[in-house]
Each structure stands twice: as structure tokens, then as C-alpha cells.
Image (cartoon, rainbow, N blue to C red; front, side, top):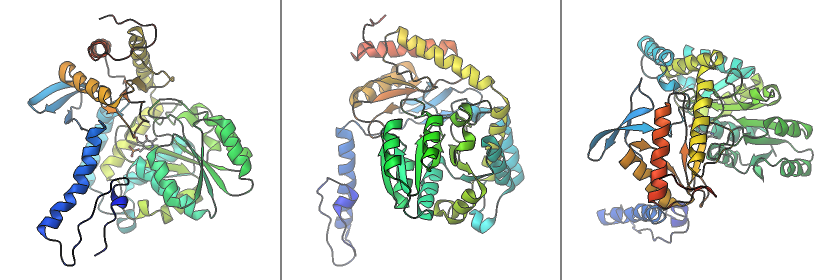
Length: 437
Ligand code: PLP
């Protein structure tokens, strides 16, 4: 049997693996547990151990939900959902899901390689290609998989490609680049001058610039048009992750590239069906040869079961609705502005980068967890604490995502609760602001 290397499993933890010439005894098997408990101990010691709240969403009542708390069920208001527009409970979406399930059943029946394309998936891909003004689209089981599988495959299809990646890119992009085996170059977050120096040093070699439009933790927006034009000037391809922007920005909800009028200049647009569209799944939209090559060569597409027909039908209904309706987006903008204004008036350290994502900085892992616990326990408000490695150490925060379905009364209750917590825990307020409590 191959000897376990502790450094492979837990870098930095000098554990000794049990040795045995024959089959492991019970004692040896128990000894393996140390690898896992040490990892957990370390997370606890750094206040990074993640506790997932047991929440039951209730269609028709979002953002109200049921918390299955240790002592019994309690009502809570959810303020951290990435179902940004509440489309997960929209009647047209739920109806599409139910009727497709009644027609076609629950599952997909296999990979597309084995079982073919289900018609709702074909329809969904046509809808996505139209949304982004591209020739074709390809659906994956999640946004994560679409980045990982597409980037790994693009890199393998372009020998010697330099992958030029924004420093704040999501883990799915980092993993895709890693699996491509290509050389990578990181440019400072949203820094055009740094990007240009990498592009010019790369000269004539094949290269691709990989970036996001809305960054999910600070909520800041990339200069998508400027990055795209710069990349084209130096002969680089472009890959844009619009996961936090699709459904949300642009006249038809196609994202920031649409809003900035450059969809046509971007080679590959990537998005999710799981956030503003309220369902699940991910995709890319691009030219026919790019989509066909990724469809044909990406293991993360080929070797996994397709999206179920009901999921595809629900996502399609959501995209169609948000192509034609701005009501959800404009109601959300109103509530986002109201939340930011009320937090700032209370002197709470809100970070306003002009999007729907509203981070409230705590800057300490233990305090962030304590604030979230008190919010849930005393005030019936659920906001998941965001700690390292999702954000750098010292940048811990509560990430608030107002939706069009949050009422003015819920906003007032949220800000009252946060003000109470900031005072009770002695957390830092924005400079020059006094608490009202
Ligand atoms: N890309 C970015 C920028 C993300 O933040 C996320 C997830 O939050 C993903 C991709 C993955 O999307 P999904 O949740 O659909 O897997």
C-alpha cells in the first residue's frame, strides 16, 4: 500500500501516518482520524470553523424562512442569499420546473455522451446564446464546473498559452488555470497598467485574459470595456466571469458586458443559473468552434450527468422573464440604496462599490462569527459570517444582499439589530460616527 504523505493531506502539519505491512487494524484505522481532527482543531483555533445554519426556504415568503435551531424551529429573515432577485420562488420559474418534472421526470438519465441532449437543455442553450449575442452556449452542472472545465480545456487546446488572471479571481478560475497546466501571470486587481505590462511582455505568444465583472466579496465592478479593448490590442483572447452580474445588469440582464456595450468583443462569457436566475447550473457562451471544442474535450462536461430537464426548464423561464422585465432589478436597486443609506446613517462600516453587494466590515474572524451568532440568536436575522480564505485575514465581514422582496420594515429591523450588535460587541464604527443606541 502506498505510504500516506502528511504534507499532501495537510500542508504544514507534521503528522505521522500509521505503518502496516498487512491490512490496517482497527487501531490503525482509528489513528487516521488524527489527520481530520487536527485539521478541524486548527480551523476552530483560528475561528474559521464553518457552521452552516439549517434553513428551510418557504416559497412565497422569501426572504422569511424557517430556522431549524438546536432547541426547535424559529422564523428568520435571510439577508445573505445569492438568489439576488428572489427568482427561485417566482411563479413562472416554479411552474416551469413542476410542469417539466411532470412531463419528463426528476433526473437527466445520464451524461449527454450516454443519453443525448434533453430538449429543455437544448432550448436553454439557445436562450443563453441569444442572451449574450453569441453563436452558441454550453451548460454545465454549476458555475464552478463551467469555469474549471472550460479553462482547463482551453489551456490544453492552445499549446504555450499564457493565462493572464486578475488577482481577485474566484477559486473555480484558479483551479481551471491550474488544471490547464499553462503558465499563468497574475495582474493586480482591476489594474490596467499592470495588465498592459504583462500583455506587452508576452509579445506574440498565445494569451488569454481571465477576469470577472462583479467581484462577489467587495461588490466592485471591473472596467470590462477597457480590459477587453486592451486585451484585443495585444492580440489576447478574453474570458469574462459574469456570475454575479447575469440577470442583474444590462437592459436584458446579460451582465456588465452588455451594460458597457462590449459583449461582442469578449470571446467567452461565463455565467451561473444559480444566483440571480434562482436555479442551479453554469454555462459558457461563445463562438460555435469554441463551444464545440469545449463540449468535445472537457472532462468536466463529458463525464458527468447532465442538468435535469426540469432544472433547465426553470432556468430558461427565469432568463426569459428577466430578459423582458426590469421590475425586479429596479426594485432591488431601490432596496440596496435604502440599506446602504441606513447603515451609513448609523455609522456602520459599509463598503459601497456601487453594486447590489453590501459588505459590512468587521475585520476580525472571532468578532465576525460572534456578530453573526448574535444576529441570528437575538434578532432572528441570518447573515453568514465571511472569513478567511473566502476573504483575506483582517477583511472578515458580514455580506448583505438586499433583494426586491426585502421590505422597508425588514431593512429598519436589520439596521436596528446591527447597531445593537456593534455597540454590544464594541465593534469599530465608520470614522466620525456616533452610535444612536
Ligand atoms: N464564479 C464566481 C465569481 C463565483 O463567485 C462563484 C460562486 O459563488 C462561481 C463562479 C461558481 O458558481 P456556482 O455557484 O454556480 O457554482
